[in-house]
Amino acid sequence: MPSKAGKYACWIALACLVVPMFASYFFDDMFSTISYLFEDPARTQLGWNAAGYGLYTSGYSLLCVFGGLVVCGILLDKWGVRITGSVFVGMMVAGAATVLWAITAGFPPERSLRIAYAGCMFFGLGSEIAGTAVTRSIAKWFRHGPMALAMGLQLAIARLGTACALVLAPRLVVESSGHVYTQAETARPAVFGLGLMAAGLILWAVFVAMDARFDKQRKEIPGQARDDGKNEEQFKFADVVGVLKNSNFWLVSLLCVLFYSSIIAFKKFAGAILIPRFAIPAETAGWMVSMLPFATVVFAPLFGLLVDRRGRGTLWMIVGSLLALLAHLLLAFAPQGIPFFGYLAMVLLGFGYSLVPAALWPSVPKIVPDKVLGTTFALVYWVQNLGLLSFKMLAGQILDGARDGAFGVELMFTGLCVAAVAVALLFARSSRRHPELELDLPNKA
Image (cartoon, rainbow, N blue to C red; front, side, top):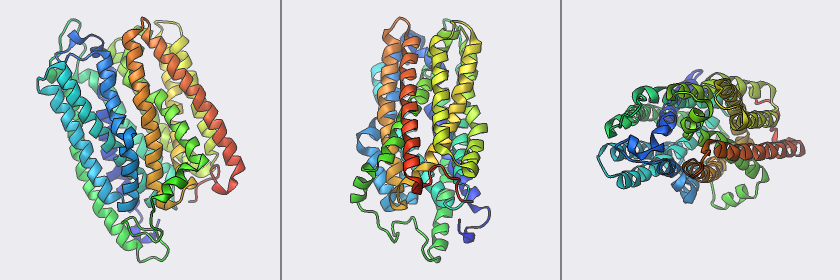
């Protein structure tokens, strides 16, 4: 970090960056612990069923998968985080507002689902590019400092948004037997989430002003890369081919899609899985699954600091993937109706959810040049969203069509974790074969 940035400027910038991500995570998971409402269309005036809800959640990834994420990642490297990030933070907020409108406008179920799906598509693309811009910005501001710690803190606070959604949603939409929920009642989490996004939009504007000043100071220092589209090494579209030929890029991407799908897709249907498996009410299920993001709030920064100080990043990826596998084996095969096993699974999954990202994301700047960093993050997120699109829809169909849908979905998640462990082992082998990348060395202080 250049000294001219000021001793505390990087941490102030980080504080501005985390709020839009906190809001994004809240909005994305606002229905997770009340997903049981959609098992019976008659329970809400909205009239969605489980398959429809699964379709809605999959909309998050559609534009990301069909080229939008890759193209926008290239724009991020061409135009910089300020211009591109501002466009897509705005898109994220507009998409969330569209979802809220679809839920509250009184449309028939099919039309409300179509509009909400469209809103979720724009929200998803905006969120992913905003997240890419945030991650790229952290890599820039903390290039020669505690990058893994900074990324861990960002991740922790973002996932605190998920935790708030999981805990708050059952209180905003209180479970009541036989009650038919109005559209306004169902939309309460979305109203709260949109308010958070308004605050995030304001703080993003503060960061843009800080980043412009940061670049103005850095251009006076010879050899410092800039982020205003005028770097000494200009990005070329041919550079994308170089990223795609990088075997380590594919290992990171595959680990990302397999590991995250086993957790993010699980969270979307947590209520529908945990309530029948462990015979608990919706509020208890909310607290149970909230252990995942709450664990990352505490442990992601600590594990990030561990990676900064001790290295061994690929080892932590293997350990975290194994913990996720053990958690899903418990969720699938533990005795029915005993909540202890659900809590134990969430503890294991929470540790895994902290370990893998704390080591995974700081490894990306080590495997590619700075000029293609935004494109590389976007390509990793593209592969991730391809999996999320598929596995969310598949989970909804399994729950809607199988007699014991919770068990069937958990078998799917278990298979994903087995594959994640295998990919993490391959990445560790690649690290040993390419010591020049310093994947397992501590980050420079």
